[in-house]
Image (cartoon, rainbow, N blue to C red; front, side, top):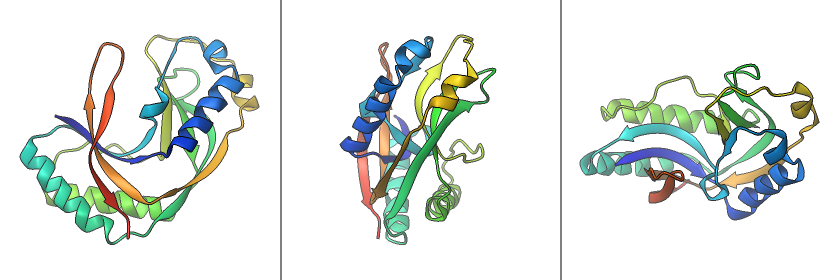
Length: 182
């Protein structure tokens, strides 16, 4: 099964992001972006790819251990941008203000996965929340970004081992396990 470890967002934050997209007319202003469905908004802590049931159980035990060592913390979503850049956009994201507790949690998860010999995507962690993907080249006017102002805070009280099922109309994510922090 295809899996990842994530912070899921509560429904009110998902609704705020959806409203931000609509209020700023981004569906029209950023034609060519394939928008993430609001129910799929999340912050990826580790993309695992295909794992077995046995590996899922190992990851579950590891995350149970790690989650007890971390307290709940707040995250502030602020700003937006594109990966790798505005000239060759592939991902449209909302930024996350620096949060040492988030970075410590991410580091502990990476260390735990390595110790359990679980393969995962090891590219450098750049805290963000993907709200759209771009498959074909599009031209984005920089002034659109300058006018965007998104900001909200929420508490992270648990992390999740998520399963991703791929379908022609987009992925469907489901929670395999949740882990309360603290």
